[in-house]
Image (cartoon, rainbow, N blue to C red; front, side):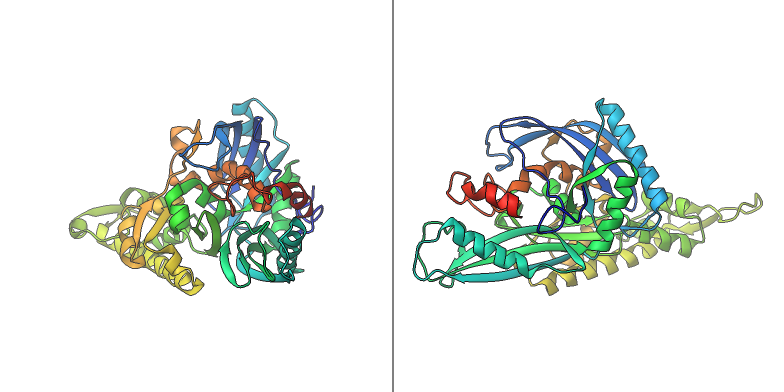
Length: 443
């Protein structure tokens, strides 16, 4: 199925899950550092105080991951290389799960992810709000986001208003003169999505749905209170760093910058005149984002860049290593701080930031982030799934795990979900929730 057919918004939506039966979901996280395929079994679960709104338990039954080739800062640079890595990752997951994958839910980081809020209103003439009125106002908001060069990834109503009174979650049955809605719409460039789909198709697979990377990593790394009270999830990948802001149970803002952990590695390779792979090892083993008093006394050995046996490793102080790393980390964190401030959502984020993604595992990263962002910072690891091997329980796998959680949120995104954590509305028994079928077909 093409990304560009079958929906007024432009590409296939992930099918909402039946809350009464089990499902098998296959996902693909295509990153600048690694490509991860997860096959998960989703089984219905009872409503509970832990992760409310989640309708299914997620159990990982297949996992395959490969080092990335052909991707730079989230952008596909070599179709053949990416196709080959995708095939290897999917094949490994299929072997582990003992089943064959045909379609996948895929993440997207490239294509200059955009985040906009569109407002629309309709005249009610003092009448009761009916389902037809909700249809009209949602369509009016959605049409504003239509663009020839951009495709909509997510469209989430963040709240309704009646006669100027904002913050109404379910206006059905209420009376008023003017009904309004605020719709958060996440978009990406169509060309980036075309190239992504082309890679998947060349591996004889189809795209079942596309999810913005910041949304997926937030779903995996944030806890209920953070999502409700307001929090930013910062996913620090190899080639990209993304931001997602959640509040009142909803995704309300996303952003991305083309800087990640690989940029720290290349800074080290240039500054120490060594190979990329040696610079990466030095970063992981000896690197730190903050200076330590003992760094001047510690010496690390830097392998030479050439193949000549007579070239001897050079000895440099750990302090030099830290200076090179911290310069790039500070620049990145300052950019993130400014982006949050510029977005207008800084008061919503408040004092809570969660760092996730592989690059956040650098020694001293939480301390550096606390100082520059001036907020409480914790490292977020993927939560809410079982069956993950020990090697995949770290922050580097948050996006992939978030993609397996996402199908439970898909019906809420069509604005008529089961209620709960990421739902714009209360419980799924309202008359508003019963509009689900129409909205699924129209959006």
